[in-house]
Image (spheres, rainbow, N blue to C red):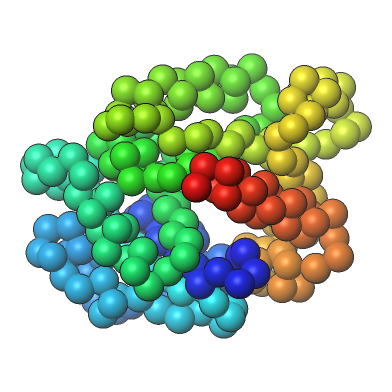
Length: 218
């Protein structure tokens, strides 16, 4: 999380991975989709986390049909309107959506000030990135939000990874590290239990890159 910014992490993936990783269990009642279909007040769903300045809008299984619900609603800026309302209370809103291109991802792209795309160094990832770029341009109302590619799972022992890093020296880098896997075991961000690790430093550099890019767009 960026120091000095009150941040909302909005989990839009029905699997609830973002909430799991910050130690927040899903509520007994599955109500997340109500924000879209019933105009439910977001404040009633937002949960505090154990990390200062970070709140969570959790996902649950009710979001499994969200893509279809958004198409049925016919409101292409439904998510954008919700984030605009929430921005009165948060300096940063992070939208975590499933890695698929559909109506939900299109809504995210319309709402976003920046799109962050993690890319393992492989030809298939490069192809997927080209598809994301095309999708963003197709779903932007006026101008495309800036895209920040992030090289993830980088292992400098591998030539393909070194070549990807050399070809994209300005992209943030998240290393391949067992401490990142431990994040899911501990249900804590890497910075909470291994703040001096290369992985934690990589995430900190990513946040600085995000902040700098957003400041440049302001």
